Structure formats: structure tokens, C-alpha cells
Image 1 (spheres, one colour):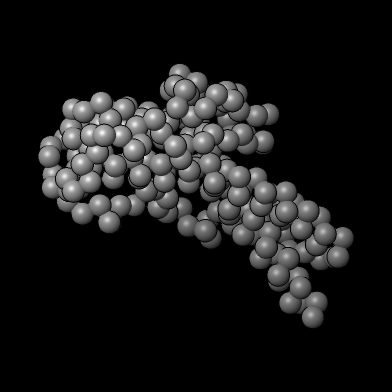
Image 2 (cartoon, rainbow, N blue to C red; image 1 turned 135 degrees about the vertical axis):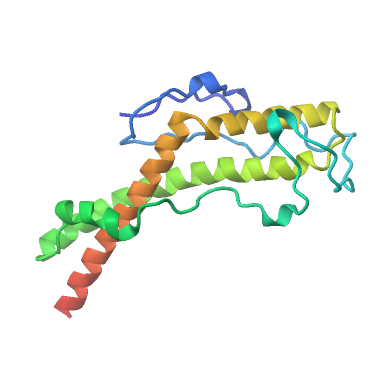
Length: 193
């Protein structure tokens, strides 16, 4: 099962493309190239305008010090020990070389998926952070400011979508699964040597 995300460039993806769906087995990228936007290197850029000038669209407020910005990814309520209990049933202690090889295959497959998914989530968070800082440098009300604010709001909508939250939860689950498998293989290797 995969997500039905269009292959259109990220600036053309709209919120209505993101619908609720179950946690995927195969993960497609959330975005394509977010690095270059249509409002970069424009004439109304005011690089020295760092003092607060008011509120942004949809309640986004300027921060006095943008160096302390945390893009995302904080720990949730459950601890790793609580999540490991679920993996103990599926991946008990390794007792043979064949079982070790099977665990390693599962680990390698899961690691590739985790890296792709985490890169997609990080891309959105980094772009959101970049836009947030960029908005502080534009003259409020200018065309560049409006374009940047629209893109910022679009990315905020993506981050609040069910699809994004499902991907984030799936990424967290994969991280816990991979940590557990790695621990089981390491324990087996230390017992064997």
C-alpha cells in the first residue's frame, strides 16, 4: 500500500491532496524540491529588518530571537521501554545464526524506509524554518512577503494534515523497531563471542 501523492512540484501541492490514510508499508516522498522558491532574490528584500513588526498571516508572530527555533521532533509521552515491549514479541532474543540473518534483513529494509521518510519530514521542517526566518526580512505587505507567507501557511497545513502525522508516527515506530532489532543482534553477538 502506498500514498497517493502527486508527482507535481511541491509548490503546486495543495492541502486537498493530503487525505487521511493508514500508516504506509511503502512511503512516497512528501515533497519534491522545496529548496528554490519563486520569491527568493527579489527586489523588496530588507535584510536588516530584524525588529518585530507585528503578526504574520494566520497568527504567526515574530520571535525576538530566531536562533532558538525548534523545528519539530520532540519526544512524546511514551518511553522507549514501553514501546520495546511490543517488539519483544515480534523480535525475541536471537538464538541462531539464521535468525540473526533474518533480523539483519528486516533491519536493512526498515532502515532504508526510515531514512527516506525522515528525510521527507526533515525537508518540510527545514523549509518551514527557513521561510519563518525569511518572513522577518521582507517588508510586510509586499508581494514577496505575501508569496512567502502563502508558502509558509501551505507547509503548516501539510504539517497539520493526517497524512503528515501518520508518516511521523510511522517514522517513530520504525525507529523503535530498528533500535530493538539492533539491540537483539548486538546481544546475540556479545553472547556468542
